[in-house]
Amino acid sequence: MDLLTFVAWILIVGFFYLLTLLALKYKTIRVVLAIIFFLPFAVMLAFFIFRIPQLQKTEAHRQEFFATWKVGGHRGSAHGDIPENSLEAFSAVKKEGGQLAEMDIQITKDGVPVICHDANTVRVTGVDKDISSMNITEFRALRFLNTNVSLPTFEEAVAHCVANNIMMIWDVKNVDENLLKQFVVQIRTHNLYSKVLVSGFNPIDVYKVKLADPKILTGFTWRSWELSTTDESATIPRFTGALNAIAQVLDVLVFGLARSLLMPKFLGSDVIFYHVNDISRFLKSDAASNNIYVAGWTSNNDEEQVWLRDYLNVPFITDNVGTVPH
Image (spheres, rainbow, N blue to C red):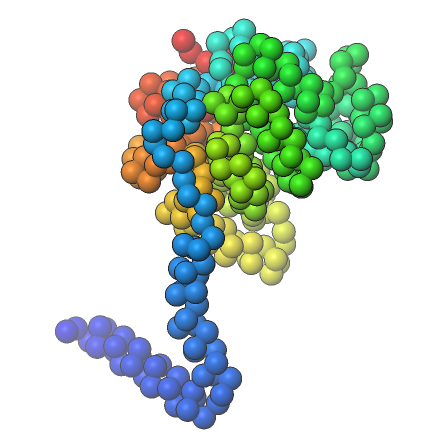
């Protein structure tokens, strides 16, 4: 044993000896140590009690969905004069060779689900107002910038995609009981179990959807440093000072839960959406051994798209389906 190792062991033994002495004298220390000791067992027990069972690999609608989806449009295939999250953008996905349209769901003040990525409509309409403060009449009056095209409701978007045989990803921001009911009604009415996947960054939302109907395909979306940064390159801090430090610690914790696949397994997720910068063949192999698919967001590089589709066999979404190599 070298000197450095010997000193390290002395420090470790000394630390626990000191901790024992403090525990004998102070009740608070004993309580804290007891909590630290039993917490891992409590977490493990909660994991097995509250986890949602995953769908079996042999589930026909699950197999059909992931066998069909290769390329999807992020907010549809929005480019040129085609607005994002518009019915035209969803149609463009199919015309340009994709199979699936991803759409973002918000909820109006009177509880109507509508399609828009941002909580505020200023970027896409020029009207600076939160959707949660509008009623459905006000929302229907909105038009995409420089067009006479209205923003669709959730019901309109679903009907359009069903009529045109376009698969869907419903990206959720905030799930309430009314939205859950609408999900279940739409999927059961149109028999969309093999056509729709519900996904989001908030694991609580994903958990609620799977609880409402275990047959619904769900996905957990994640990227590195999501909690502490605002951009996909993870360079712009979301907070400053102590809050930023706390967010970074939480990001490390979430990384462990996502990369170990504990989070998607607990949620009963069928797929985990990784930012394309975080995908590797090792990740796909690990996920497959845990009965979880891997999907990529958002790939806009043709070499990367070929690598994902042809080498890894990983489905992905892109901003412009028409530029994906054939």
